[in-house]
Image (tube, rainbow, N blue to C red):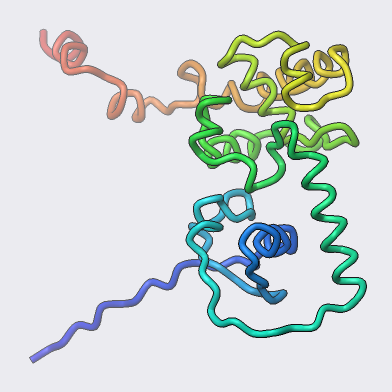
Length: 210
């Protein structure tokens, strides 16, 4: 008799970032050692998704001594999070869930990251006032919700309406140049794709039957 062994597929893992480990300690009182890894399925754009934060459970309870610098860094992170908590924050992974993303932008977190991946950093740069990720979110919010620049300014904490207008314009130009051509019209499809995936049965009959 021949026995076939089923090959076990090991999912790809990624190192959990320091920002996520700090957030986990603040929110859940769970301290995660540096270098800890998790399944890639629990991350989007290399950051833990909110659902992963909620599902984590402590492995064991033990006392630990923290250095003075570690406590200072923790307090700084906590202060930064409190200062940013009054506005929508698309850079902080725990602030918005997938459902929040869909309501605000029409995209899931993964779709948002996918859209951003098509835009090169030279076209939509990170700045002191906003990240490329946030800039994309602002223009998507404007498209979905029809909000004015002044309302968006208050919601996300940008300094002025003029600055928000500039951010939205930069993001719009970048999306139009690098993302839209890949998914609008037929230019991104091959002839075979059109035949196999985008031709109705009626069109097939009209074109193939004499």
